[in-house]
Image (cartoon, rainbow, N blue to C red; front, side, top):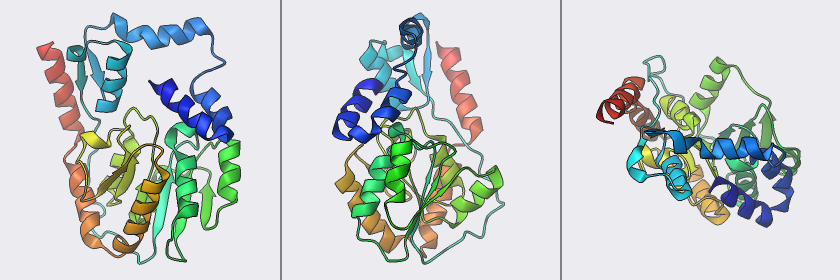
Length: 259
């Protein structure tokens, strides 16, 4: 399922072909790839962080009744009760600058969107595909940061208007919860753990994977409605607070006990 999705995208956007080959392990030994793909066949119980992961296993032939969805968690503290509110539209991407994260889709949508003149898209990527980096350099109001320490990243979440990570394939996407916990709303796709969190609205927006025009529409809307909006930042933290790590551990124990 993962390979099919990425391959279809690489045909549509040939400049991500190198990223596609790296992501899908085209150069990895066939026997090793096969063992990785078939490992679930030896399991009596498969714990999935998201419904998307579960769906990929079922498509591969796994028994749906053995695949239990238990989303990851985060502990929201009271350290940042004074949430930063800026009037500028500051979009943020955090993750590997690779095809699977949909960064090329975000860049193309950003280039196409009619946004306030002072809008900024910040990319935090320790590694980025060369072709995707070239695209980023060709687009106005995009800056690239080659990684941050945890405290710096936490502060960036606090001052950013929205986190955008429109992944094509994502086992969960812990960065969504990290952003929400700091009061930063998020935009992603259904091929992530977002559908298993708080659903649509409030502080979470979803687009169909690879649908650039949909992303343009959402970016243009949130660029007008989110800057300077304290309520949505409170909603973001409230969403994250519903998923403490204690809930994750309880889910694991319950699944093991009932299996």
